[in-house]
Image (cartoon, rainbow, N blue to C red; front, side):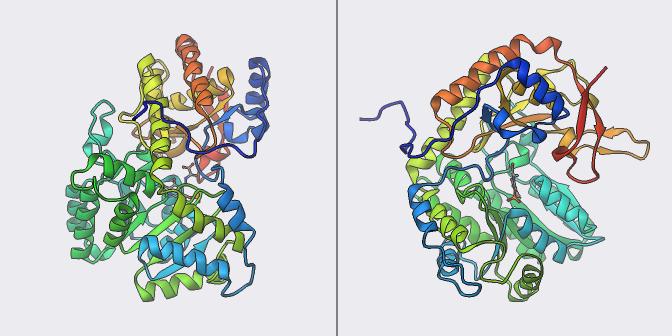
Length: 459
Ligand code: F0G
């Protein structure tokens, strides 16, 4: 019997209270946070969809494994279990544990980057781009054309445009290209999946031109789900086998285990090349820690080893993707413009379309982020010109290609009624739509400004 209701495939053993607040209170909290939800206190948030990173609920098996944590400085049993789990998944010989994804990025990209070097990606995530640019190198996004069409139901909008990649390689010369990074799923491009075919083509181009091919694999289990569902030839493969095949095409991988590792902290860098690994190990020891723990404690490595098994469980993945789709399709039915099809870890609202009366230089995405908090206590994040906007020499904003708001769903944390509440809040968002105003930035740092910038309502 196949029932149509897909239930959460877990029971709740520990609970964490949510503090309710009134709209009036939230208006004050928002003002105190300079209209930047990163600056809100978490106890003032009702449903926290700021990120799916490090916000997973761990399983009883992960907590049990943590008690086994071997905290020896070198050669710990926990390191061996972690190394085995990562090796089994990635097949790569060199594994460098880091405290989170961006530490793996910093190590690899500062070593291979620098002035005059170029990186290409389906879309660089913000920390990826920041690490590359901080090294002096240039990061260029090459999403496929379909990624810009929010209505088409093309199933692999996360793909990288290999024709354009080939053109750039011919123009720049492969010796100036530090790496090609395929981010699966493509977080900044709407959480859209990448097909195996595309990974194969990128791999082929990179091998042919002797360019390093890096997988940013922090959501690879979710990506595998989409390949299994939508790419011909993968229906009889397990999710883990699909992930393993994708790793086999790459030369290196960076992972923030805070996503599909189902843990609250951790990451790693894996490499095939011995020399590159030796160089990165040096940086690992200088900046993170000794090679058998990097930036992690033994118990963290235990939790990741278990998480990397659990995340490929078919019941878990079915529930995970179905619940994200449920949120996306429910608000789409109400008339909220979203990136369609719905991605794996988040729903992305097209704020430029929803608030077409707000000019891009007044950040429609940030306006929606503030509205979601004000009306429903929901915390989300802008992925648009606040995050990726730049200034030209005259100080004018060069906007990002899209003005999105991401509703990221923490793994195994919220239930159906929480999601139904979010859907209901969108009724009010629609009702109040025309009187929403934009924002201006009053203070900002040079890099990754969205984390700490201050805003004020536009006049
Ligand atoms: N790569 C991708 C695709 C990411 O989504 C992230 C983090 C990182 C790298 C960096 O990993 O946070 O462990 O240092 N994304 C989080 C997010 C922050 O909210 O999407 P990290």
